[in-house]
Length: 182
Image 1: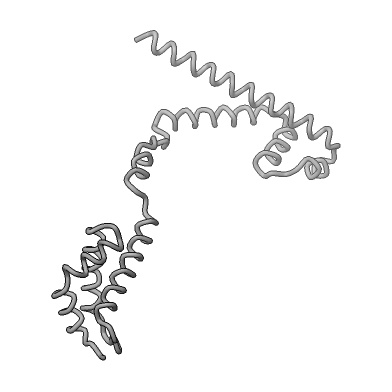
Image 2: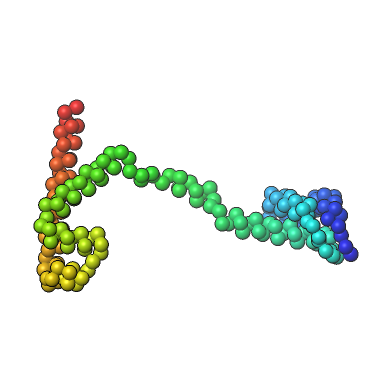
């Protein structure tokens, strides 16, 4: 038995309450059944060549069930409102003007401290921390032992940390003075 697109659409419309009842029983929700039947109507209305359909009622029902399953799978990929709410409350960690200014000041302090290091020590520090060179590579490049490289890096690290710590203390003292003078 061959059924035309118009014949299937007419059957869907005329037997809509029956299809909805059967689908609601299988899907557990009248809303899901209505949505699946609406999508089935759209699919049937747009169909070009349906071929031979022996049991039009079963065809419509199976099509609606498949659409409902696909919709359920698709919805499962999306976040629920309960999953979205915590994401909305994530604080914005984009630096504000003050944090940007602080970071620039700290960077200036590090650059000043690096500028005060001996040239070889500064070069080793930058090659190690910025370029990622290893102890062995630095020892070969600077024609020294690995122990000397480690010692130079230790001294450079201590100096840079001390210089930036002193900077932070000085900045904190300035801010406290500003707050207390208000």
